[in-house]
Length: 326
Image (cartoon, rainbow, N blue to C red; front, side, top):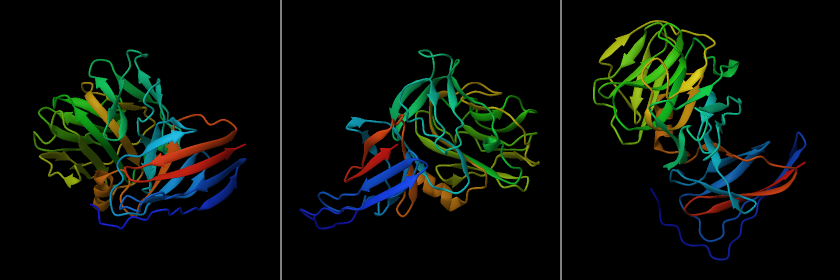
């Protein structure tokens, strides 16, 4: 994943960009302090309290650490793939809500009330939520942005289940007849994707594994059929039904629905208002920011008026963004 690049000593590359938008002004300073490696990234744009970075190297950037004004801060890193309408990174690390990092403000509420709510845990992408399978879930009120079109849509999520018995991963709606979609595990270890009114795709048994991270995707193509993926590999359905997508104004639920509650860890949920391609699913599976891809980075903190310094670091380099907020 890396290539040998000779060390550059005493080199400092400075790029200063000042942008004024909606009462905000930003100055970005980009510095390479030691050597240029395959994990090179740059800051290329800004909007409000978020910055856009570009992976300019040859390796996937999986984990970015950040400090805000010298203090460690959780961030959301959202790959820029067209059609994203909801994205929950669970990187807050604490608190009673989880933000929608797509910008559509579909805020999730942790239930039941903390401290009995889902537990914040560390994982491969900074932070995640651990659900107990008893009464833990996240509730998101329906909105126009996540009322998905009848044409096509996609659901993507990382999970690490405690077991592979029947359990809901994510559902929009509450019952079989009153739902827009559900992504679930069916005992023993089958992946199940239903887009309402009994159309579905169900894999063979023992595809989903316990106590392992895996990337699951359900795609409805708009032609009354759907596809399911595990770790970017399309699964051949062992059972299926074909019908039109059931649209409606249903609330979104994570880790609960019309079947048993989810027990285990869930992370990086993305909802798209179109069918993801095979190559896009592979990109999402390969890491947070693949070579040549743009991603939006947002500090999960309230920024007051004045000057703030956001420093982003991979395992091999750092960039600094100085934000002037009026």
